[in-house]
Structures are given as structure tokens and as C-alpha cells.
Amino acid sequence: MTKAELRKTANARRKTLSQEEVAVYSQEMLHHFSSLDLSDVNTIHIFLPIAEKKEPDTFLFIDWLYLHHPHIKIIVPRADFDSALMTNYVYRGKDGLVKNLYNILEPGQGELHNGGIDIVIIPMLAFDKKGYRVGYGKGFYDRFLQKINTRKIGLCMFEPVEIITDVNEHDVRLDLCITPDRIYTF
Ligand SMILES: Nc1nc2c(c(=O)[nH]1)N(C=O)[C@@H](CNc1ccc(C(=O)N[C@@H](CCC(=O)O)C(=O)O)cc1)CN2
Ligand SMILES: Nc1ncnc2c1ncn2[C@@H]1O[C@H](COP(=O)(O)OP(=O)(O)OP(=O)(O)O)[C@@H](O)[C@H]1O
Figure 1 (cartoon, rainbow, N blue to C red):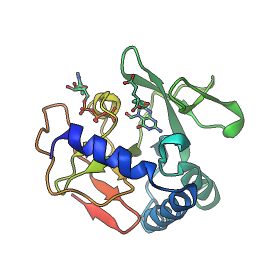
Figure 2: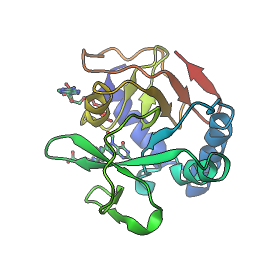
Figure 3: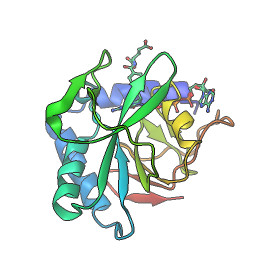
């Protein structure tokens, strides 16, 4: 299937989820994530959820990381929709967050992070069995990931499709994808 088809289907499927289902699926994904070895990890970049779009609740991940790996630095993005580029900030708690025009919670101000990132946790609508992903179609993560060397972990509400047929040279493959059901490695 094409990215446009997958985007449409996944958006529609997400709309049918209740907030309770989103909470359960997020918890299940966190359970899989918690089985990963994070002993060498110092920095994790993680998106903050668009609740209105039924994205996984990554605040659960952040709370879990604070509790179990307090030394890990959490980095969150701010998206510039004119350039399709993200700038990255050290996460300092919910207080400093503001909602942008797309309902994405973002750090209003704070400390920019330009250093290394060991893991990037990536939002997506769909993925395939080769580890390619589909997002909302603005290419934010493709642009970001091509610049850095990191472990790329996707979170997806649904199981993979067989193959995305219109992958292009910008598309960056995931190393791993977590669904409510299991972990896929590529
Ligand atoms: N939580 C989260 N943060 C993220 C992403 C994401 O997927 N999830 N992104 C991942 O790249 C970037 C933001 N990308 C986005 C792209 C489109 C829309 C959006 O609401 N689009 C409208 C159409 C608007 C239009 O085309 O003008 C829509 O889908 O209804 C939101 C976020 C960076 N931050
Ligand atoms: N590194 C890049 N440089 C220039 N253009 C890019 C780059 N990465 C992606 N693009 C362009 O951005 C557009 C969106 O790409 P794509 O459809 O793969 O988005 P997506 O991965 O679904 O979105 P997102 O990353 O925002 O979740 C495409 O036109 C693509 O060619």
C-alpha cells in the first residue's frame, strides 16, 4: 500500500479508539519498552503526544524513565512547520509546555540540546515489515534522523503492513518498532 492510503486508514482507525483504549495500548507498549537494555543509554529523544489524534501516551514513558533510569536525559522536540525542522530541548516537566497550532505540546522555552542522542522514540501512523514508517507526511523525522546516528524506536498503535510501496530515498528505516502486541526488530 502507498503512504497516502496507509495514512488515511490508520487515521480513521485511530479515530475509533477510545481514550481508555489509548491508555491501555500505551501501557502495553511501555511494558515492551521496559524490557530493553538501557544500561548504556544517556539521552532519549521522545515526542509528546497529540492526545486529540489518539497518539500513544508518551508521558507514561517519561514517568517510567524518571523512576527507573533517573540519570537519562529526556529531550523533546519543537516543530517549525515552515521549515519542517525540529529543534530539541531538555525536558523539565509538564509545567513549561505549551500547545502549538497542531495540538502538539512543546517546551515554550528552555535549554536547547545539540549533543548526542542515544535513542529517538518516533511517532507513526503505520509501518511495514522492513521497518519503513508513515507519519503525517511532512517529513519532520526523515529530516531529523538523517542528520544523527541513533537507535530509532517507533511506537505504533497497529500491527505492520506487508510493504509500503512508495518508499523514497529520504525515508529512514527504524531499528525497532513497538506495538501493543510486541516488539519488531529490523
Ligand atoms: N506528537 C507528535 N509530535 C510531532 C510529530 C508527530 O507525528 N507527533 N511529527 C511527526 O512528524 C512532527 C509534527 N508533524 C505533524 C504534521 C501534521 C500534523 C497535522 O495535524 N496535520 C493535519 C493537516 C494539516 C495540514 O496539512 O495543514 C492533519 O493531519 O489533520 C501534525 C503534526 C513533529 N512533532
Ligand atoms: N531529508 C529530506 N530532505 C528533503 N525533503 C525531505 C526529506 N525527508 C523527507 N522529505 C520530503 O518530505 C515529504 C514528506 O515525507 P514522507 O511522506 O516520507 O513523510 P512522513 O515520514 O510520513 O512524515 P513525518 O516524518 O512528518 O511523520 C516528502 O515530500 C519527502 O520527499
